[in-house]
Image (cartoon, rainbow, N blue to C red; front, side, top):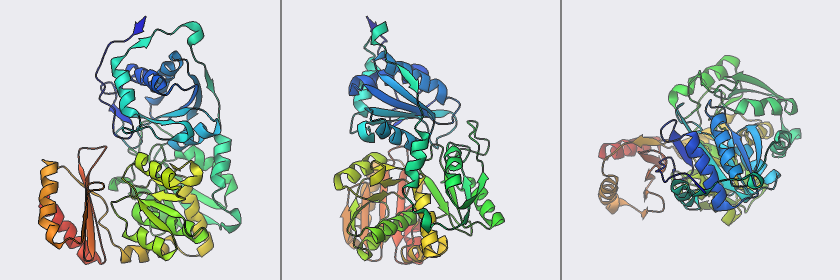
Length: 453
């Protein structure tokens, strides 16, 4: 007996699975993916969880059915963030974990993030394409009674909260007023649980989980989504502010004046914090912007190591180098003690501790680095003939370049400035980042490249 007929599945991306509901992603497709994941990994037990989206519960149920029909025992940890799946996979010592989430995608999307044992990522170069092939073929034995796996709802939330608190020394914390914007995603529950253990006053906005996202999709990279946090910081005279995406594996910081801090400078801030405590450690960074991070590593006896962009590449580099910390300018921050995975909670806790230890404001800690290494921030453009345009750009600048590499996209270094241009792995755009030793040079070169594109 066999189940299913061959079908084309278009929701597999480079790092995870994302698709438009009722078209690219349906319960039937998710059921097949659950069975295919189990067939590929042969796990005994798997953790599953879901974000606040209204479609997540139904998709998680279909996923669970697929896993169980392959004989897998499922541990359902309920409503959670992606990092809770990373934690639970290790806490329960199971063979894998799957998170149902579309993070910051539009409301009519959802998806899956997959890991195997020890929260090792499953991406296009580590098994995701094999899972897609199995799911599309649809050749599954009809499940029978004794072959079915079980499903139990078990929480490890308290243990997760306790683990987060190990990253800070409460004796070094000082009372702070902090604006927290959960974007009506899943972060609020975690903040409520942390609150009794911390000497902070939280100003909570868009705090309650709501799958209709009444205040907009939780994506703090969008300019229109930042002003709520900025206004609250100014109104309440807060020490700093934090905003998260929907599954809170990324956090975004705002200083005491409400100014948004580019993720690039947060990477440098945290790298310095780790290296002050533990010099000679390795720090992983991506190729988009890195002069500031490399300079900090040099100043504090650390070793910078470059990784390709994307969580799967960063996690592989973290494990290979046994790095203490890694960061991407996209606000993904990775920690050795968090299974080499990314967390949206640990960065802000470390930042709060830094404010307590230094006695400085957040702006005073980051602005000197911003002035020394100004950057354009990431600029996205849709262009035709990406390969041709990249080649033309390299030829145009080649004579003046000090260094050219194709490690991840096109990177070119010149006297006093550099840029990285790469195709997105998740969207049909190219992404440009420029940094320089003066703001004027950075702005002029950014405009020059944009005109060329």
